[in-house]
Image (tube, rainbow, N blue to C red; front, side, top):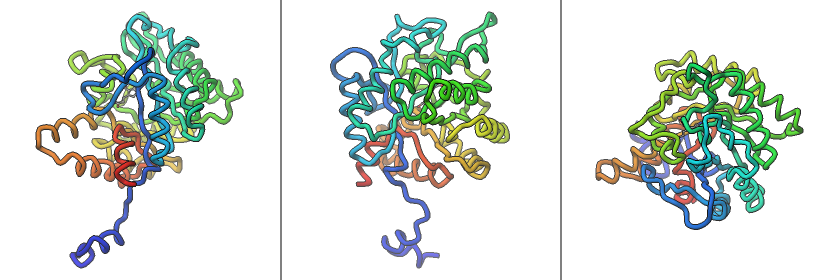
Length: 321
Ligand code: PBG
């Protein structure tokens, strides 16, 4: 076996998996107001952009060969309420951001998150019923309005991340009825109730590591793989154009199983906690930052992901050039 590993060129010849900038999707946070971007403490190198710095950053990302971004709004506290009513407000920073990005880089695909958590004061992805649980069908109606508003503003792909039942079909029907047949759906199909979302909730201020939100009533149990395949089948039947597994690194077996289950493109989301732990360990001098970063992404692709959402996207694309 060692003859095939003897030199860099022979190793290149036999390499089975190659990461390309085209495989990557850059998640970006945006907030209202003007001025400089604001750093997210628990995610070194990640910022909350304003609309103008976002457009600039998108030009850079597009020039690096990255085909898509995923946009997440960070909403001021006083705009949040129990019903997430700011979600469909025309003055919402998300819609201004989509328009600004499409104007600055028309060729860059814009993916938007369909869920209410940035807008609700309780931080859940949907509307609560009288028992304090997330109400499925009521939430789906709100998600349909949100998805149509996002497509209206210019989103190429809407990505329901809420894990309500039946939302993919309902969103597809609403988009079509509103004339948005071209808008695609990337379904967060196997989204697990994960502790690795902590830093993200800090970034969009929907919760913190010290006050974790319990989303186990709608997000999946990390123990289950058959259930993930069941979710994928349902989303496919309901009209999803692509499916997603999230988180990615701790769920490589799920990515592989989903890859073997469906003919649809499979996305994997290397989430905020995966990003944060690589940064933290390398700051302590316990891991080599670049080597760990690159290996983590290669492993996700090797497991079967066609595309990877990762906060490392731009810097990895730059290092690949
Ligand atoms: C919420 C949403 C979450 C993420 C993306 N969309 C967090 C959650 O479900 O609480 C997490 C992304 C990350 O951790 O990087 N709809």
